[in-house]
Length: 173
Image 1 (cartoon, helix red, strand yellow):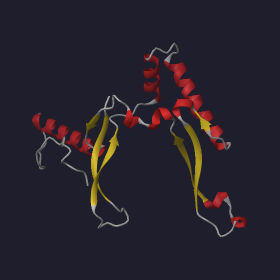
Image 2 (image 1 turned 90 degrees about the horizontal axis):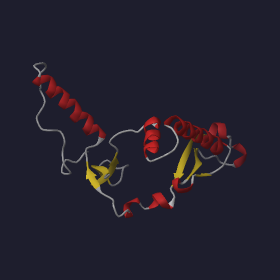
Image 3 (image 1 turned 180 degrees about the vertical axis):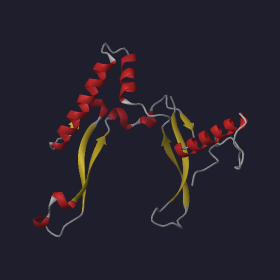
Image 4 (image 1 turned 45 degrees about the vertical axis):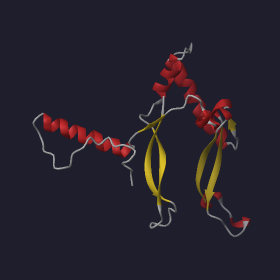
């Protein structure tokens, strides 16, 4: 399975709208796999457990992970990596005035990848596939539906032509 990517032209300095633009790759996913589908996938790899048991274990793992993180622990999932919390807050002039309920603006869950995930690019079987951005895919799907409606005798097309599938030369701004 290839890693799908699109290309996007972005400024070299995001705070300067007149900055030179460079083209960067962006990883793209083709679909969202929900918990039930993921459980089916695990089962298909020869698991002796049923989909509902796998789903239950994964759901309990998520609940327990949250519980452990909120208790101030870093949770190591072995080859999956470790999870921990970080905080974003406004600074205060001195520690005596700090109130976390007021000054902490957000709590983030971070994933610290293990060696298993650390060097995906070094995988000898790695393949790459250029694809559209999700926005471009949605536009192409809409255009395709519109063309199908017109072919069936309804609607009109006031837009331009083209397949909408693009190539690496069609860079998203």
